[in-house]
Image (cartoon, rainbow, N blue to C red; front, side, top):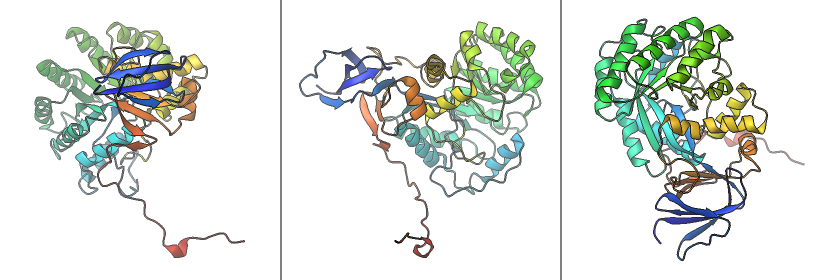
Amino acid sequence: MLNALFLQNVRPMGAAAAHVLIENGRIAATGSTLTPPAGVTAEDGEGCLLLPGLVEAHTHLDKSLLGQPWYVNEVGPKLLDKIDNERLNKRRLNMDPYVQSFRQTVQSSRLGSTHIRSHVDVDTDHGLWGVEGVMRMRDECRDIMDVEIVAFPQSGLLRRPGTLDLMHEAMKRGAEVVGGLDPCAIDRDPKGHLDAVFGLCQSYGKPLDIHLHEPGEMGAFSFDLIIERTRALGMQGKVTVSHAFCLGSPDRDLVDPLIDQIAALDIAIMTTGPAARPAPPIKRLMAAGIRVCSGSDGIRDTWGPYGNGDMLERAMFLGLRNNCRRDDEMRLAFDVVTGEGAKVMELEGYGVEVGCRADLLLVPGEALADAIVSRPPDRRVIKRGKIVARDGVSILPPPGVLSCPRRPPSSRRVARS
């Protein structure tokens, strides 16, 4: 039998041990009495948890410095400081979008992600360099990862004339999602910015994923305008607001009316569970029926040195930020990096049930909460029914990863008895 894999002794979502037959990239059967068909490769799951592949629903594949020498960060504190510094230094630092996105995709895959939504910069300094590089990478990495591209005007849309034309071109070339950014704080023209990005959505029949870092009342004002346009244009279920720091405000009179409207219009929220910014309250949002997804955001880039692409670790950050201590609360954090992210990305056939696509993760652990807290490195990742990573090693090596420089022999000290 071609294109088949038999998983023995696995525990789907932490349930009782069972066997799973995968055929032609989908889960064909599960049960405790299944036996492998003749000629089918059998993989001993050793009692591991069988989980759906992790969903990295917000990152920037074209920005990572993975595999590069250490970047000494001396950037100012403002958002525009970070934006301008990155744009001006991309070529100096040799941040080739194809190479860097390839490295991060392999990193994410070997840690268990099977789907990525990436915001990719579109600006007048670099044109479509980022979009072209990430598109080339995803063609070459499709055996290990599905990548969805958001055309993202990181440096501003209206403040840099010509960017809107480039956004149109990015959508024509196949970007799946329209991106936007802080209508008040960056472009300082909320009506103009939102008219432009919603106009792109209408022109190309695509969804919107807009960064909204704006805090407090400013963010709530921008969110009201997003809600207004979502309703007027019939884009229910087609808008994601990323970061949404304003929803982390302690002012319930400000936040609760927004949550009610977000739920009514099926607007999705992306949060990384940040430690240093107000964060959307995932338990309140999910209780209201709002789709909530998460992502690593930047990974080892000019904005900051943090991040490794491990979405189980991201679930831990979400749990810490939202005071998730009980196992059922930890399950909410896990859902954010799996099923909820799949809903936001509108993934067909996602899960561990019969008929679902065999995009899966095998990880040791007594329970889902244990996997989040322990995050064992010995993981097996399955994409389209084939094992694509085992114990941190991918079937697809990243291009030209630089090794860490070693100290000269004279600087090493050996303990002697």
